[in-house]
Structure formats: C-alpha cells, structure tokens
Image (cartoon, rainbow, N blue to C red):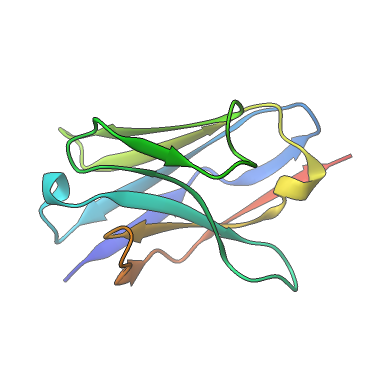
Length: 116
C-alpha cells in the first residue's frame, strides 16, 4: 500500500521560509519521479516541482523557480521542498504526489499560509 505523508507546513511571513517533507512508503522510491502540487482556495490544483527517480532531473513551475528547491533523500525515502522568499500567493495546501507525471497517489496535504 502506497502512502505519502507530508509534514512541515505552517504559517510564515512574506519573505520567510518553510521546508516541507514527504515520507513515502509502499513504492520503489528510486523508480519513480515524484512531485509537489498545491491548491489554493477556490483554485485548481497546480504543479509546483518534480524530481526524477534518479535525482538527476528537476522541473519547476515558473512561480517556483529561483525560490523553491526540491530534493530527495533516497536512503530515507523522503522528498523535501525548501521554500524561500515566500509570498502571500504561495498560500495553499501542498501535496506530495507519485508517480510523476501520471500521478496515481496523493498525500493528505499540508497547509502553508503566508501572511502579508
């Protein structure tokens, strides 16, 4: 049974930082690219970033470039999202997802709120 469990959300001020983590179990971690998505109130879920199964390739939405960094720890089966220079428009529920791009599994989500 595949499980994706996010942690690390919370409240930050504009310009601040947060680090999210996703713990994966029940899948061969190195086989799949994994991704972060987010969904703001009243909006569709949108892609944020992804990393390949090898860790050699990453992809970022324009909104995340230069501010967010995705990483994976293949020993711990975790994927992190370091978010810097946060903006109010980053407020959303952030979801871990696998595999990417044909997502079959989602985490429960973690709330990120950025105050202005």
